[in-house]
Length: 175
Image (cartoon, rainbow, N blue to C red; front, side):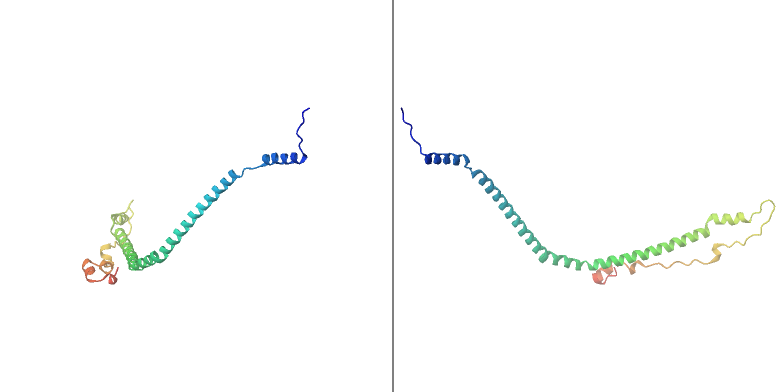
């Protein structure tokens, strides 16, 4: 009979424990590599964000320290132009009022001197069917009141000529 090697119970326990440890051993290298890659990506994005914030701070400092005073100076230099625009708007209002007055006067004179008004007066004096109407006194518009021209503005009061521009500085111009 062949003798079988005797295995002690402690050897069996150690052997079983080694086999279970091989079975349950987890290779964490793959997970660690994935985590390292994610951390590197996040760090790269944080660096980019920090760079962008630094660029924004620099642009903000440039705008507030250099560009804003330039814009304010330009606004102050445009004040005479704004004043001229306001004066031009006032001039346009005066011209509009004068044009409206002239249009009203023209309409009134057209009604006074129109051929239709003359024909109405002529036909109203005819008698039909033998009846005689009392002639209405015909008032000729030409004899009623003399024409009085409407006072108008003088453009030279509002707009400077080339000679005035050469003689006067920009701050003294009427417009």
